[in-house]
Image (cartoon, rainbow, N blue to C red; front, side, top):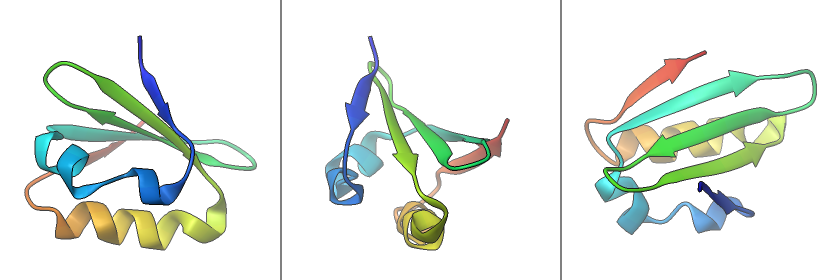
Length: 69
């Protein structure tokens, strides 16, 4: 079962350190991020105004590939 992250502060460095790949899915009103670790899938639904903050946080974490779906 995936774990839902409810706030952007919930995307911690600990989770990003273990993340292998991030999938993004765009809809009309939000963008869904799926952070895949070895054991767990974390999901986060972001509003369009939060996208830049989240993507910069992911890019700064290291070699994490962002794959749009």
